Length: 156
Ligand SMILES: [Zn+2]
Ligand SMILES: [Zn+2]
Image (cartoon, rainbow, N blue to C red; front, side):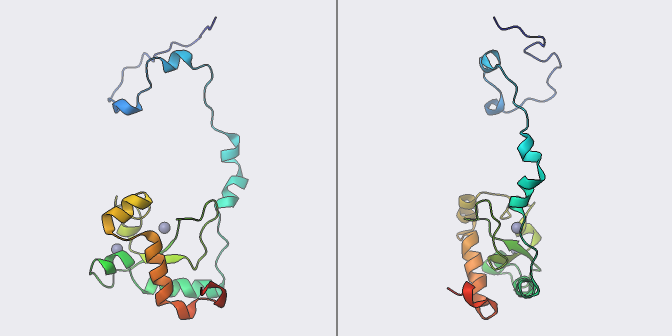
């Protein structure tokens, strides 16, 4: 028989109601026998190493300087020229590795992250549905504009 030291339901009253979808079903807490703990692997520094990108070489830095100088690629497609931009690295299709410094595009802060409509704020299809073009379209466009600055092995 299953014995518990702690009550199944917290006695602390809920201060706000969670969306119904987030609430565990009434049966689940009764059948659950172990508590999920954070994997120690996730906190291990080696985990972060997989996500790290090599710091850019002087030539890569120069390329990214030209990328940023193009100004925001989304704004440009929306008819607004010259919005100051930072360099965004493509996420699509990179898996665990981060994209190379040559798979980048310029984005203004709003179209990058934190505004709710930036490339980091939504999924790939959501982004494409909203704007009518994809992150990869922007990266390819940028590479096309700067093809003369791409190293030979990148020009395919
Ligand atoms: Zn923009
Ligand atoms: Zn980014």
